[in-house]
Image (cartoon, rainbow, N blue to C red; front, side, top):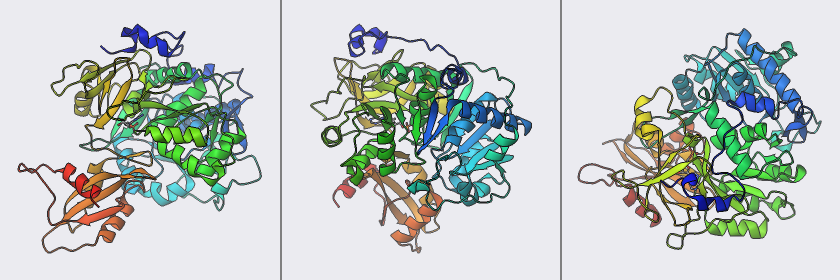
Length: 557
Ligand code: AMP
């Protein structure tokens, strides 16, 4: 066993901290009520939306009213409520409203196109879709048709702006009519001052269905329970020594597990405010960090790079951001050094998956991650409290320190399974232990390093792209016979998506046409930036695609 608690010397990394922690509250709503939603915190800002503060009591009252309005429309315990929103206060308010009814929140990436959103709505069986106005009109209304969605709620990103100046990022945004949908603001106003009947929640109740793809098959809804959410909120609070004097820089998207846990949940618990700026835009994020003297964030490494490269970074004072963490993709040690030299904060590595409800490993605050001399990999940290991590060989046997194998994680943040997917659950979570698909090792001091992936995942601008999904889209084009998609290193996006296709006999298509075809079907971060047409794709004698050969080809030009 290579768990934190079995290696007392790992305590060295967190002086004075116990090896295991027991969360004080069993569900996320109790966490809210004793934290940011408590009487003691009520008049403090819980959200800063650009220059506009929103207090804890306003978030509490508006989520109460929305919950009552939803209950009046028949929404109740266990129902799925999908959120198709950017980083706006309504995200947190709708999430709390759903939890107040014992409903399950299904966060959806607002970049998804119609087909992608329809899949999530259908698979989750969501009956409510809360959407930004423009997203409802452009994508949501068609995606929801024919699904179980019986109530659409729309909202404007201009709501909750209490300052007269409209932020540049929202310039040109206007409130629009959304046929077929109820307005969130109207629902809140018409039920103002009312509270829903308290829902009895426990740690095993599902709080979130977070969709994640895989090497094979369609996206799966990971069932993050209330216990998972509360535990990892506690992990972050303890690990980063967060107090009500801290301020979260909300640079990660709230729909992703990083934003859900390392922004929203931990801020509810501590309690501390979150600075939100609609979506990631470097100058906006730098402005928020400076204005509110933000101290803590978790963002993709490409986001940190974008901040460092933004012209406004030169004069910005980001010295308050001491608890800077980056996860989701490998980090080159040189990027950490450059950021520290040019911008100031040291970026701590943090590692986890949607299925571990955000972190399973992190570099303790105040420590610096070692670099593996052989691979040049920056350590992702040590396992967090109560977590047992094993390195498994191809035969499934546990390997000793220094040997490379698949990382398998067990702990209170690991999801019990995938929504309605018992086979995928058995395959990925045998006996409750998560097979991460990440390949790495632990050194003699207990630091973990990732050196490879078993899974064919691409990380483009911090977003995960699964080749299988892009390939499935390409082969839906009538001219395409076969398709193979790979990730290619890219200075700006980290990795970018390239595709190789072969055409059906007698069929014709240009690379540009195929790129356009994917662009119409897939979220912007997924479509291939380059398509090359080959007579045949390289395969083994048994017909298995040789991605390695395509990667070599891409590297050669
Ligand atoms: P997601 O489910 O979107 O959070 O993606 C999880 C995957 O992101 C992991 O399985 C890893 O492959 C990758 N990942 C997460 N954190 C790190 C990190 N600190 N370094 C390298 N890869 C990471």
